[in-house]
Amino acid sequence: MTEEPFRTEEDREFGFETRQLHAGQRPDPNTGARAVPIFQTTSYVFEDPESAAAYFNLQEYGNTYSRIMNPTVAVFEERVANLEGGMGAVAFSSGIAAQAAALFTLLQPGDHVVSSGALYGGTVNQFKHLLRKMNVALTWVDPDDPEAWRAAVRPETKAFFAETIGNPSGNVLDIETVATIAHEHRIPLLVDNTFATPYLCRPIDWGADIVIHSATKFIGGHGTSIGGVVVEAGTFDWSNGRFPVIADPSPAYHGLRFHETFGTYGYLMKLRAETLRDLGGALSPFNAFLFLQGLETLSLRMERHVSNALAVASFLRDHELASNVTYPGLPDSRYRPLVEKYLPRGAGAVFSFDCAGGRTGGQDLIRGVTLWSHLANVGDAKSLIIHPASTTHRQLGDEELRAAGVAPGTVRLSVGTESIDDLIWDLRQGFAKVAASDGRA
Ligand SMILES: *Cc1c(COP(=O)(O)O)cnc(C)c1O
Image (cartoon, rainbow, N blue to C red):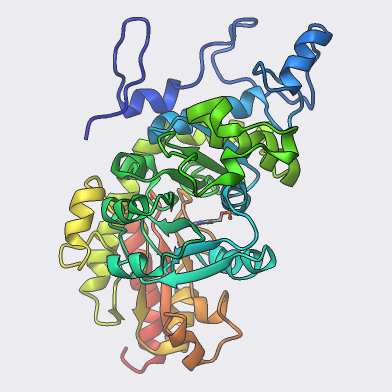
């Protein structure tokens, strides 16, 4: 794969590490500020009535109100779009808001979505309940089975949805195969690339049409801010007959035909000018600034995240009190061929394993560690640990847990960028506590 070109006057193609620092920004022409300024403003003074009218008619592209666009947020959007190899992006106040808006823009009541069943828990809730309220039907499929995707397609299917690296068993999506099946049926493939980041995988290179991130995780990278972003490849034919909601005159924008009028930007324009305008989940300029800070070091952090994750996973695989280590980057993972194809730089840093001693074992491990933080998040530079049976899945009995793909002793890790010896030392402390109550000490 060659990197997407970011052309300058000299027509040079810059590398990922250069683009994560520079794409979408030049030093501020008014002040010379090198850092991206935080434009903490709700609104913008129009030059004259004519240009104001042109902005509101979408005849010219200009700032009107920060619910719809903001110069700090725009740098973040352009930078993520550049890193993902997309046509453009729209940022949102959370990853969940980004997903809702991405789907809302292309769905109508009566439509149908096919989704991988191996998803982040918040997304499962969102799809189960929100889609039903919108009168949109949903079919869960095993993401590893291409025939299941094909068999689920109906005449009213409008989207395929999956994660690059799925939750909780580390499924790696065969993006090219699933995208091909989607396109045979004139359906777009939406990929949540949160766990991989564009440094480890760029789904658009493999045929994905829309890429979604919770920027809250590795993009921000420091556990400080909630945000999300939707990137579109700009290659999907929204006038293929399946998407009157984008191709036909829009009653929500005085009869505008988004795809005919804006071509490759049609979906993104509708996403911003209608969906963001009406749902209102806008990213704040301050959070966009923090995400830009995160992006500047994305490649450097991801290199350390994946090398630490591989070391921790290898330690656990060989530990007598750990089993079922789901890290797809382990050499004996069943996802090895897909990791080599789609994630050659590493398979992310989030995975789970089963701790001996069941529910009590998992709790003892959490009590025994001091450096790993016990909390519900992933993608922080600091290492994180959580025991689903006593937190996120607390209300479930052992049988129900198993049905959700979680064992009583399952522990989820998000491996940070600390010194690897300290992370292993701390897990040894945790296992000593497990062994003590297990009578194995
Ligand atoms: C966190 C997360 C989300 C939701 O994002 P928020 O920013 O928490 O709204 C969606 N998908 C994945 C894979 C996530 O990790």
